Figure 1 (cartoon, one colour):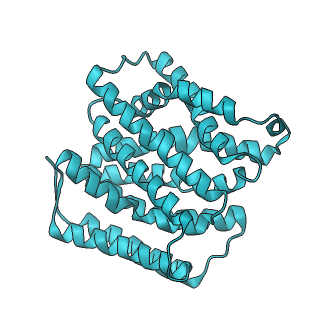
Figure 2 (cartoon, one colour):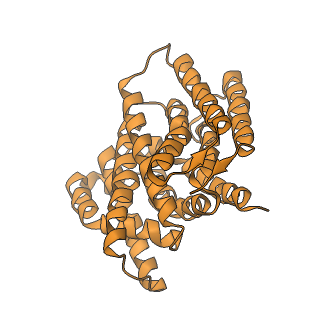
Length: 290
């Protein structure tokens, strides 16, 4: 098994974990304020991350790497959770899943600009085709127009892609688990403060399902999922492995069907097959890594 295939398989595990984020957020916002979910989940994740760093005796980040951790935190600790959780307070997780399907192309573009990866023309064409399929799907599902919720999701997706690229590259020279752990720990003071500000005493009476959803969002897509995702990006390359994200919207659609009772339509399945096909084609295209 070559490095690119291995990276895609490892990254796919992370994508499966991430794919539950929107449906589980939709359940959580029924009981909690979306801002409390965003900051509170980061606080819990950072607490576990701090314990991990102490247990593993990971070295302190260098001054140069510290700046990179700030960028990662702005993207995946603050930006993505805040924008997407607020979007789920009003929007549909199924619709949001498809909008976020544009993330692989955004990740590739950011990776190319930031770290000089050089995808071939064929790779770009296949990536654009995958993104175009996602856009067409979104327009068909929302009567031909983009909404305020779509805007929040796009902003959240861009933030996540910035964090993915920076974290994936940093994971080439250090433990991927330490990368997300330091990003969480560095942002902990702000998250503790904001969790306190947004907390409501009524949350103590929330249902076990609500708190289970909150804990899942804290420990898995906020922390453990990055173990696999950053390692996959580091092993297989940002441009290549980012294409696995094209499968995420349809994993989310299945999760939304199971957890929320959203219907799986023929159009969902047709677009799923088409998008997965672009991932298979993209894997065959040349990507030069600097």
